[in-house]
Image 1: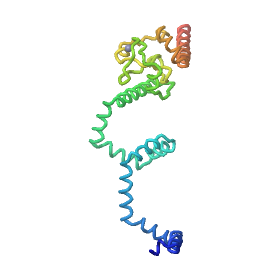
Image 2: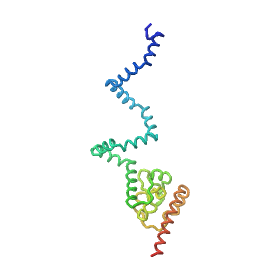
Image 3: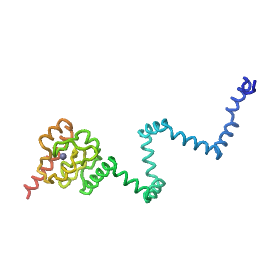
Image 4: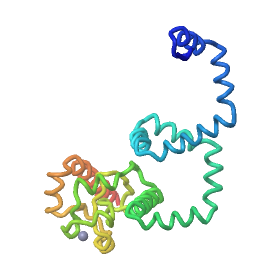
Length: 228
Ligand SMILES: [Zn+2]
């Protein structure tokens, strides 16, 4: 029988693995190039596995991940690297591709809307989720037909020219063409009776908010007229 398989041998080995001598040996080994190379290979192999991808997808949903990523993006190191990358042709090519995807098109349009709202000095500026507005009502209020989820505009019910408001209750999903043909005139009626009935069912809180603001603007305008 081998010594290490004997009771005494196993006891001696167990004691050794508890000892500082072993800890030191192990720590030294982990500093070696050989160990580090092996560890890198092992990690690379692990990253190829479905198990890792599942773990990552779950992990990316956690608040810990989000705060860590957000913090990292504020760092000098990250910003410098990002700046260097943005100068490359690879980055520009990637962006051209991305802008053509459904998500890219949606994001480009929604940031455009925020920029326009800011330019008009928006008084109410909340972040608006295009997808959420579409989910709650995908019928274009200008023509009463469903919009294409991959290609639609958000219409400002209180027009930007009247008051720049960026809030979910001031938005409705509309066809691009319908939006272009819409009159900019504001007479206090922002929804057709049909659309208003739909909002009563699907977006009652938004309707209340919208109508309160419309009433406020109409009152302010008639005050101005009376004073003139
Ligand atoms: Zn339409």
